[in-house]
Image (cartoon, rainbow, N blue to C red; front, side, top):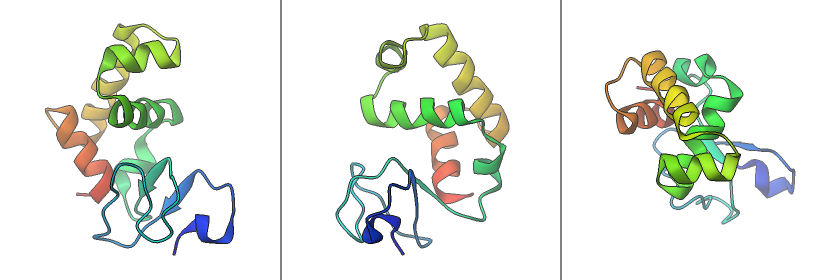
Length: 105
């Protein structure tokens, strides 16, 4: 089910397990979405709103420097948020952390 199908302004669009998000476009309705999550994802629940915002922006713009500029924070603050995300997901790299956030495992 896609929250955008109903025309809602939902920031989060729940997706079926195994559904992939391509460039922020929902495969169900074709609408632009901010984030994909799984309801049973323990890693997602452990994140702060700001950590998720930094991860989402990183996926969108590609570098910590660009994230910092867009969010109006320092690059070190971005690094701190990403370090916290890696710790909470028990991973060594940001790519691994993002994978766990998206897939739940």
